[in-house]
Structures are given as structure tokens and as C-alpha cells.
Length: 214
Length: 399
Figure (cartoon, rainbow over the protein chains, first blue to last red):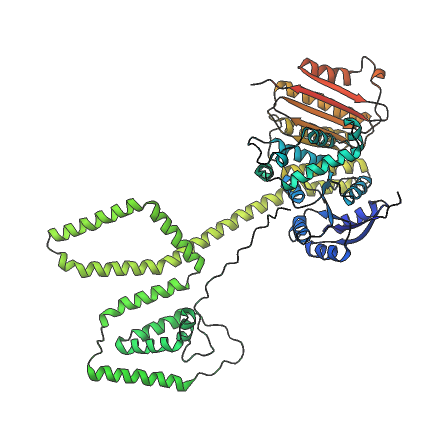
């Protein structure tokens, strides 16, 4: 591809991790800066205007959610991909509802991460198997009737796509499996992302909290 | 668009405490401070103090009490000098009033009112010195409790009062007892007012100490856990630094353990499907050193059929970890109301089902055969070079 490289800002409080990601990312992605906490991240985003921000969920000063709140609150068009070691559903659902366009775990390979960054830069959503599992779980636990049927439940097709993601399928494999185009897969995932962000289903947050209960 | 869940931080606006300012003071700064607090002109208060002192000495007592109990405002630099002329003016006014009272015989000098006045003023000062939030909490809890038992309290009080009056009336001593009762009431009230803020403060201290102790215990438990698990593993990793596979295994296993401890609800692996899948995956990951990523959706109790399914899933994981050559194995388990499905997928070499010899126990017996014996089904999808996916399905019996 001869498209210009995606300009990426890495936000993580671990220096070792930042340099690791920098080294792993492919040529189609250009790391234009790093930030190590909420304040420096907000500042760097305003100054550098990156295409995609790789955002750590856990950081001093409010974490990724705070960065999302401050940057997206000011109407910035920057896109965020959340990157975390966290398995806590409330963190994951929290950053997605805060406006991140995807969530991947830090164990992701460099190639997959590059791919995910490109996809987020193009405006698509990126779901890791784990996020897909969380979403299925969150939308499945529905005893109460949905308030807004369009937003509060997943279509059969969206469910199928999420299931395949949870099973470890790549988008290309999903497209092949369901006899649809990769673009359609992306459309479905984006639609799920929209529902996840806009749905007022109180179960979503309640479910995330309940998961945390030990 | 985006839901904003940030809680608004409520800034507590505490009323300023009574202080004795240095600037603008005439004597000790009491009147000046009290005037600022009450929003009055200090002149008014100063005149009031003078007048009360002249009338029956109460002004001086109040002034002294306030002086004692009011903290001095911090002032940096050289203290400004008092305006002695003004002080002299107030003194003159006081003397004049005193002379007037003495000449006309109007001053009462009611020494009997002193104890009550002193007590009252003292209580008020102590009350004022307590923190506003403490006071408010004290008020709210007491009032709340009283409200809860309002009927009982009123009935009880009424009975006591009626009983006492009845007794006194019967013995014809109602008239004599009246001043005594009044005095007792005043004293009890005063003592209550004085003691309440201190009691509240003590209670708060106690609570704080308790919280601190709980926090310390949690900390100790946390430290113990980190020591037993993470530090131990880090030591092992240093010792096995030459063996990358072992290092990987140790790191994965420790990561899993820590995650479970931090995020997963405590589940009994013998009781629930999700917990059982996670445990099986963890065991096989440890045994073979290949990461097994588990995603679980929903959960349900483990029946004998589902236990058999777990064994089939274990065999599928073993195959994937041992033979496929895939760097990672994905496991997806979903528990729905009607059925439980488990997918075990690798991106390894794959194989051709036709080429698998009849006597190979792994797939035919341990996976497909076992599932069918227990009323479920298993499908294996694989092609050379395409990886393998084992799909297990078990219908749940409707209860």
C-alpha cells in the first residue's frame, strides 16, 4: 500500500512498554510521540494531532478514561485504541463507552497491533476476542425488556460476528465464514460499537460492576 | 454523544471559624473577630460588651471566655499597634455608664444569674469550636434517631412529666420544687451541650482508627499475597533465565493467577462451566507451555454431562497445544439457556480427518465419542495448513 503512514501517539505510563510497542509496530505506522500520564497525553494530542492514540487504560491521574473525557469532550476528531492488560470488565466497557474505537490486550502481536491501528485510523472498530466476549455477555443478560430496541439489543448477525471474533477469527476469516465481505464485517462491528457507546441499558454498567464483585 | 460519568467533586464550603484577628483589634481582638463572624460592625459588639459589663459583669466574663476559647488568627510580620485612643473611649463610656447606674441605683448586680450565663456562654463557645460537619452529623444522627422513635419518646417524656407533677402535687410540694427543677434542667442542658461535641469528636477518632486498622490489615494481606506469588515467580524466572520456554510458562501462569485474584469473582471450578473451562485451560497451558486464551460468555452450573464436555474440551486443548504448532490456542465457551458450546481453535498445521487412523484415541474417542455418549455433539473443522477448530455442543435439559 502506498497510503501515507498512520501517525500514532503512544500513551502509557511504562517506558519499557512504550519502547516495546515502538519497536514492534510495522512501517505503515509512524510513532510521532509518547506520553506518560493524563496531562502530558492531553497536551501531546493537542500539539501533535495524531491520527490514532494508543491509550493505556490504567494511568496515574485518572487513567485512559480521563484522557478520553478531556480530549473528546473538546470535540477533537482524534481516534483512540485502548490497550491494556486489564481484564476488568468495567475498565474495558468504561473506555469503550468513553469513546475509544477499540480495545486490544497488551499481549497482541506487533503485526496485529499495526493492523488494528490502521483499522481504527480508517474509522472502523477493533474488537479483541475478550472485548467481544464482554459485549456478548453484557447484551445477553437481559431480563428487562430493552428501552430502545434499536440500541439495546444486538441483531442476529452482529451476534454471529461477535461470536466469531470471540472464537479468535480474524475479520477476513469471519467474512469467509458468513459469506459476507470484510467491509460488511466492519460495518457490523462498528454498529455494535455504536450500540455499546450509546445504549442507555442500565444492565451494561450494572453488569460490569457485578463482574467486579468478589 | 459520549456519556460523561465523572462525578462532580463537591467542594465543602465550611463556615469560617471564629478567630481573633490581629489587625484592627482594640484589646484582644474578640469583638473584632465575633463581628466578622456575625457580619456586624465591631462597634456594636464593643458597646454591647461594655454595657453588659457595667450592668452585671457578664460582659467581662463573656469577653474573657471568648478570649480563652477563640484561636488567634495567624499574622505574619510585625503586629500593628492597638488604637489606644479608641480603647480609652470605650473605657470612658464604660465608666460613665457605671457611674450613671450607681447614681441612679439602676444597676441590679444580679449575681444569681451569673452561673447560668457563664454556663450558657461556655456551651455556646464549645459548640462553636466543634467542626461544622461534625456538628451537623451529630445533629442529624441524634435528630434522626429521635424522629424514628418520636412517638415513644414523646409518650415517655409525657408520662415522666405527668408522673412527677402528680407526685409533687400530691405531696403539696410543687411550689417548692419548681426552682430546683428549673435549675436541674438548665444544668443538664448545659452539660449536654458541653459534652456533645467532645463525645462526637471522640467517636470520630475511634472510627478513624478502626478504618486505619482495616486498611493496614488489607495491606498486610496484599503484601503477603504478592510475596507468595509474584515475588516467588520472579525469583524462579531469574533462575530459569536460560530456558525461554520455562520463563514463558512461569510468566503466563503468574499472570493468570494474579488476574484471577484481582478481577475474577471467586468461582468454584467444580460448580460452574466458566470456571471449569478456565481451570482446564490453565492446567493445559501450564503442562504444554502454549498460551491458551479463554473467553467465556454466560455461565451455568456444571452437570455430569458438562463435566464430560470439559474432558473433551481438555483433550482438544491438549491436541492443539501439543501437535498443532500454533503459538496460541483460542478457547471460547458460551453458556446459553438451552445449550453450552465450547470452541477450541488453533492456527497450527491442521490435518486431514481422512488421514487420521481409526485407532487414534484423541479425536475419535476422547472428543467425538465422549460427547456423543453424553448426548452432545462434536465437530472438527480442519484442513492442512488452515489450523483446526473443535466445536463442542451440549444441549441442556430443561429443568
